[in-house]
Length: 81
Image 1 (spheres, rainbow, N blue to C red):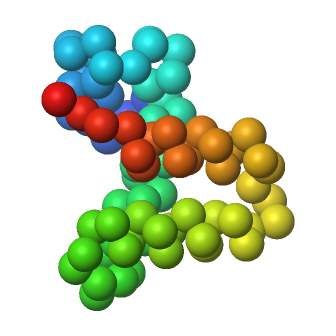
Image 2: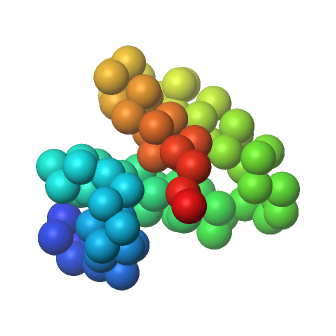
């Protein structure tokens, strides 16, 4: 899937409400997409618990750098209004 087509409605939501600087929108879409995939494979219903488990999974992934982990945390924990 091309990065531009990943979660187009979510990207538009972020853009239209100026929630994230334009250059960060692809990164937010990437991490949210990975989180949604994780959620689809997990029966846990508590959102806070799912986020913690997702972040723990990312911490164990040797292919993810510290800066990528921080980026994922920002995408997962950013409050939307």
